[in-house]
Image (tube, rainbow, N blue to C red; front, top):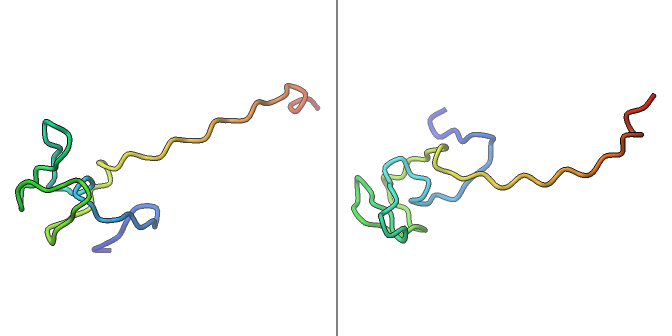
Length: 72
């Protein structure tokens, strides 16, 4: 249970999703509490996954439905 990831999907370890990382004001780098300034795609040994920082993929648009499909 130590390294359990939600939804059983594996997400690539990146500073963007790290518990210790914060986006910098310029938006190009990550400010890490443990290692200092890091680039977005990097990771370090202090990496801890934070599921609240991951932006989910967009949901597909629903198909148009005929009202006749719901008639008995």
